[in-house]
Image (tube, rainbow, N blue to C red):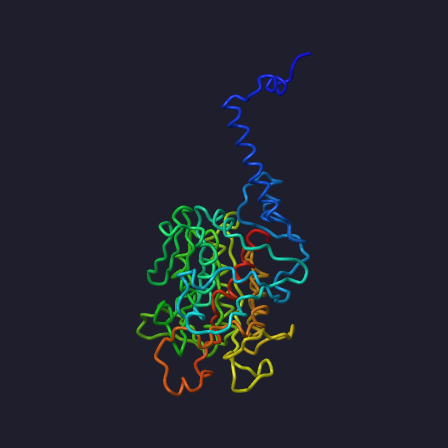
Length: 414
């Protein structure tokens, strides 16, 4: 009987060095691939079809998800559950957190706000995987564009991935409106661009930008947009700065006589959303890039909204709001509706990160008084902490890590 190749190998009693090396390599790849599947890296989460599973069927690389997924689970509808495994990193372990967000360093005594995990009603979020995130960003640019709330989400993303990168291979630099975190070994950057209105405004200085009377130049998104070109993932936000009295500049800022029109917030905001959509359609390739928009981040400036003291706010709040139907007075539904109207008509696919409702419950997660102050506090302020509590921004680690978990889910499990 003619011996099979395997039988011949057995009779020889040993493998040739070349064949042994080949078999060892195949075994290594098999174990590595299997461990990824076992570890949940490529699992399907309920009704969310894993992008990697779809890519494997098509023989494509795991990349950025494009298109719509199967329906059935709204990851933005759910509840907060206690998780002892959180936070996902320690404040002291991330040197990139701005001092306006380091609550523990500035004396916050409690830590419960760090231990809550968002649990959607009909499925589970995939765990944030820093290795997968960095590998997928290899040779690419991720950019966050907007105001200080988007800057907080940017810093959160950096904190979630930076520990995988040796100190000598990472850096953070700021030049005007642009802050860039570089991971050299991955040839990738995670960036933040300060543009609170997306369009040119009198608040474009990334350091000195407090204005009591906001002025935005109509049709000026390219002023900033030229710096966003080439991004592979871009996450926009704009909302907070549009509240209050608002004026639109028809001409240029250097005009001697300025043509200024005062318009309702809703109308001005619609102009910004349309400008963003047009810019994305003209400058981004939907087959290669992903565009996201983060919805309004709620403030907790009035305790009366949740049945508290009329003179109170988020100061000294350590518990979240347990009313599932809660909606704060600062979150204008007519503005939220503008986003929906514009996006529904958009021919360019923009993924909406609806963080408003889930963040509204978290009156416990703001920086409050536990931050670096812009200016020395007066005796009157010190005597009344409510007067200087920051109920807009969020402690890190904390709520904004969840925003990035949702972003991660929408990138890989759209």
